[in-house]
Amino acid sequence: MPSTFSPVPDPGRPVPSSLWRDRDFRRLWTGQTASQLGEHTSLVMLPLFAVLTLNADAGQLGALRAMGQAPIMLLSLFVGAWVDRWRTRTVMVLADVGRTLAMGIAAAAGLLGWLGLPTLLAVAFAVGTLSVFFDVAYQTSLVRLVKRDQLVRGNSALEGSRSAAQIGGPALGGALVSLLSAPIAAATGALFFTLSFLSIRGIRRRESIPEHPESPPRIWRRIHEGLRFVAGNPSLRTVCLASAAFQVSFAAMMTVYLLFLPRELHLSGTAVGLALAATGPGALLGALLAARLPSRFGHGTVLVSAAALGDGVLLCVPALHGSSAVTIPALLLINFVFGTFGQLVNVTVMAVRQAVTPDGMQGRAAATITFVGMGLTPLGSLLGGFLAQEWGLRTSLLATAAGMMLSPAAMALSPLARLGRTLPARRDTTPTATDAAVPEETHRDSGAGA
Image (cartoon, rainbow, N blue to C red):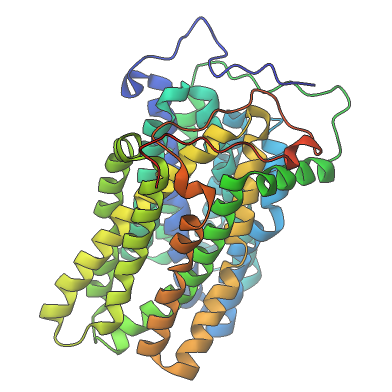
């Protein structure tokens, strides 16, 4: 059955023309920002919890990290199919409640001396699972909350906070564990999820979901429809390939990078944290640029150029030598540039994906891209460790950074590079497994495309 979903489902509460005057969008942004901080601080808190409280060895830490990442590979496609049939506010609220309880249990058990590695593994898996639900839901929620011409600005705000949290969250998590005990730091992480719950629960605009047949297709068929739709759309197919190339190479590069800074450049932990934190301000600048540059120069031109510049600047890191007085400013500049152009790519890709995807397919498209792009990151981390042992830190860092350039190359050779100043038109119906395989015509704005 075709979807009858309208982007503004409640005529009694129209969407304000100015995005930041919209209280419901502000609540979504606040909740999403708090959620991302909680999610990314927990990525550092839980491993440090294991080291400081349980004296975990390297193998146990690897298992803990893999347990937190496993839900991306195992559940993303299922979550996308489910979210398309639910109200996204409900999904996000329940995910926040669950993560608050999980982090609270870890904190309480740690304070009482009852926490063991099995419990910590269960907490990591629970937080990772619920984060998959939240992340797919908030990406789908924006499409149902704001006007079409507000998508780029909305994504700019949401992706700006997400990227800042990805960089600042681990630094904040490490600082909290250093200043407080590990259990108290875990309790602080639970507060971020509580703030997210309170903010998103306050959204008042009524949300409608796309209509579906009375006898909905089985979950595997819905997943298959999502896969077929993404694979059949030239732009989304390229996003998947470019994302996979970037994420695997970036995971490998970061494994080497975190060894290279203290061992080759002899930087202190504080200096390493400062260098990583420079990506945060860059991400904020990139989010601001994403609200203007694609409509001026063309989405394809911005995507390819920003990806090439952002990924390419990391090739400078293996060339660094000398004292910290030289290397720290250089790392700050490199990470700032990487954050700026990386965020510009993130926001622009999100807008393209939302523009070409029908309303009833938003969750499955987001989950499919997440599954393809992020599912292999654990293998990338293992590859980085292997290369560091076999080739040495400097050579393996250069090789993994060069691998990241496969992402802009994939975009440059695809129809994605020819997207113009105006986003492609979105079909208003939810495709079936049959018609999802038919590629949509890529819109080109003459004079603006790459």
